[in-house]
Length: 218
Image 1 (tube, rainbow, N blue to C red):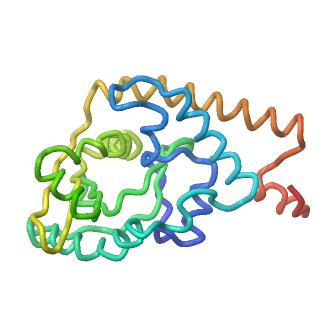
Image 2 (image 1 turned 90 degrees about the vertical axis):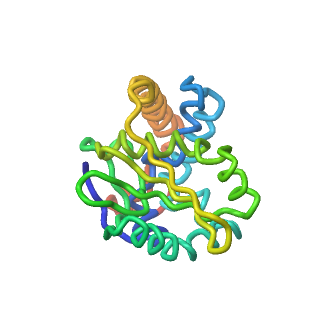
Image 3 (image 1 turned 120 degrees about the vertical axis):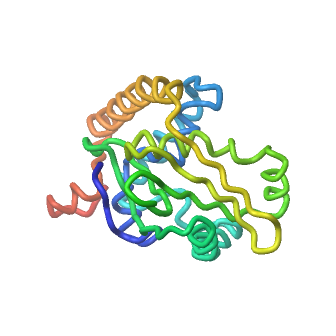
């Protein structure tokens, strides 16, 4: 695992993620039933390459109201989790597999084995979680984080300061691992082919490469 220590949502963190498929979007590559998603993955390729060529994120850089709320409440959720389990957690930025081709941004590391992913959604989502309907919407992301980091488990905390909090633990699922490997290889091959085609047909290059060549034009 390669760890980028830049704080999440800072310009340096966004730069580290440019062109790298991330676990939070693995659901667009592989559905909940662990089947490849062609339409979702093609639009994701478009977004990754647009960000890479322009040198800036195209989606998610301007957080929605609920995303911003989640970011602001994350520390409170972490403190709740640490008190509940009597543990300390460690902030992490962005991490990738050893080959750097896919990555993820867990909210915290927990000891030597665990990860923590925090969600602070609107109240109706909290009620859904209490009814057992919400946590598994993030199963692909959590399994993807385990796939990237090689850690043994990830705790998903769905937090609200007034309503009850749920914590769901995910451990590596062999079925997810078996599905991720071919799906990601296929996705990365298509991403590479699309990048090469746009370079050959239109002369597009990543903004970072153009900067190294002393040319700011895309």
